[in-house]
Length: 280
Ligand code: PAF
Image 1 (tube, rainbow, N blue to C red):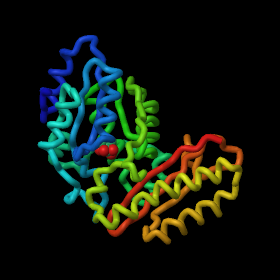
Image 2 (tube, rainbow, N blue to C red):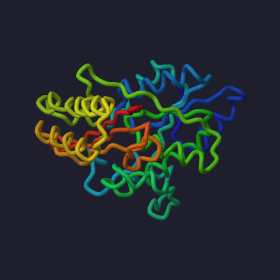
Image 3 (tube, rainbow, N blue to C red):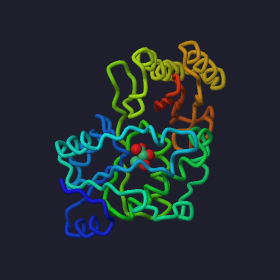
Image 4 (cartoon, rainbow, N blue to C red):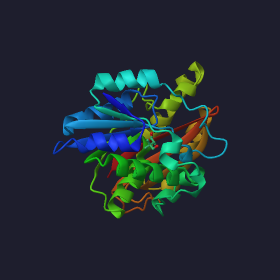
């Protein structure tokens, strides 16, 4: 696996790939089985695979965990090498945003970015959309792979790719879970062992709600309220819990057939997110 920290040298090397297709897995590092499932799918579909590790300051708000975000480069490097990744891009913030990041051009995806995590974390999706667009321009992959745990992020990236006519196919890969049902996340490392025992209630609550929807219950507001109460009873502090149209993320209408249940909740100081798609 070759490593690059400069845009120019990465581009020069990728230009030599000729007709071989390139799959790209952008990450913020601290890789777990969820990330490696993205690399595995990229290996399956593409002749070459590139990954990036960059903890993107633009997508963290004031008071969020930018400084505490786990950085485990040595282990990540070994995992990517073992997974058969061909190129690893490790840019500095200065390489991506120059000396004055505040004056850099931003990418903003209206509407989709306003719901759920967009409302709780103002500016977060502008930061994600900006860095992903920039990485896409640098790497110029044929395919790019994102985890469906960050379902809203996945929809936003699909939208910006279509809106900006980027010739990249976006793939959403199923959430990887622990046996308990807890979705794998780099932030799970913040949980104490006691909190880790409670955390699976988030997915359990999503599944319970899905069963009620599948049984024909349509009173979405009451279902959301019940789910919130279940989370609070288990000791989580709900940030949001919503039943939404799976394509637009607008509040679900009784006629919608493709729904997504989305949840974010704090356990202590750790913010967990998860979602579940339901087809009726
Ligand atoms: O999902 C992530 O790890 C990040 O939001 C991404 C897509 C790598 C952009 O920084």
